[in-house]
Amino acid sequence: MIYRGYKHFDMYFFTTVQLNR
Image (cartoon, rainbow, N blue to C red; front, top):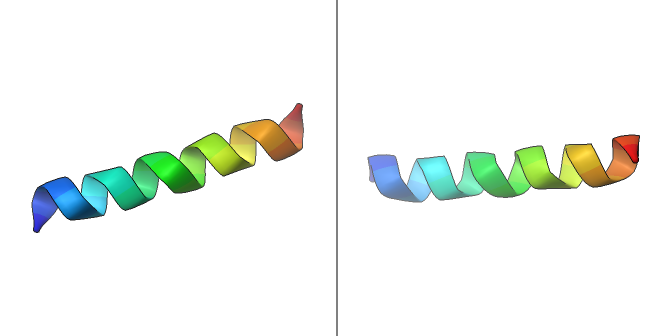
């Protein structure tokens, strides 16, 4: 469960970085 949550967070973070760029 933690791994799954971490992956989701990573994806969200990646999207935010792309938007910022």
